[in-house]
Amino acid sequence: MTDDTDSSDKTDKPLRRGWTTGACATAAARAAYQALLSGEFPDPVEITLPRGEKPAFALARENLADGVASASIIKDAGDDPDVTHGATITVQVSRGTPGSGIEFVAGDGVGTVTLPGLPLAVGQPAINPKPREMIGTAIAEVSEAFGGTGDVRVEISVPDGAAIAEKTWNPRLGILGGISILGTTGIVVPFSCAAWIHSIHRGIDVARALGYSRVAGATGRTSELAVQKHHDLPDSALIDMGDFAGGMLKYLRQHPIENVTIAGGFAKLSKLAAGSLDLHSSRSQVDNKWLADLLAKLGGDAASVAAARDATTAMAIRELAEARDIDLASVVARQARETVLATLSGGSAVEVLVYDRVGNLIGQAGA
Image (cartoon, rainbow, N blue to C red; front, side):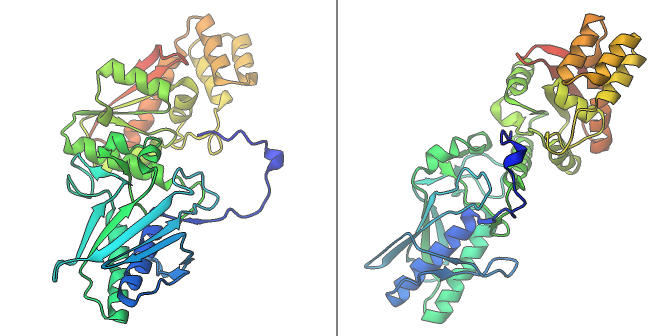
């Protein structure tokens, strides 16, 4: 995740919040069921979110036929760079058999669970528990107001959902055929990266359920491909850590796996070595002084240490060390491993692998 926008273009204007796919599906389900019972679609349709907020959603499409109604809502993710922003969330509601309750169905563009470890059983549509609960509450409210039984078939579809899902971690999690219907609060907080953290946690859950003895988290695609080849790992053993080392390690502390490998470039892992668990450039910086002091302890001459302090990139410091046959990358790996071990507090054997920009292994610890 990078931000190429010049800081001079930024304003102090608050970022606009948006709505999760779960909130959009809840509103569409409420509108469709109300139309099925009353003959009319509420537009806009209001729902109550888990924390009590009451947003109203405009309908993009609606259709009422004999025994079936459907409503569509265009997802607005606010100012968050959400891949599902602008997606059409369509819910078709039809009458179910008496006493059946709510049957959830994955329509076109909504994925199906194929691996264990997720909060849904294998074979279930990828409609997460909280959105199911929200939809259930909405269906019950409409039933009470318009004399329904609440026995319905709820089919959620997202045109182009399969293509959108290729930009997510769903395939790696074993969710095939489309996106997931997500959201715990119904609200998308811009740049909260909640979906990324959610995927990290679910990836660990899947790896544990599959009985893997090793998982690997990488800071980027180059190091991920390299560590996958290094250990011959299946895709589902690769955790999409990115900059969120803390998010992955803190979850592993509570849900341990026997062997944990952290892989990444020198700059990112030098931040981890210095104690940072959030490796994003906007929230942590490479500490040149720390690296220069480390270089001095390893026998670097005064000129190289001074140059390291003034260097503009971590790679320049690494090159200074390499030119003097000082294995700074492996020392960074060892220090990063200490940070990881302290965060995990036992339960896993830890390995740290440092790669250069083309995927060559240049430092390691704990192998």
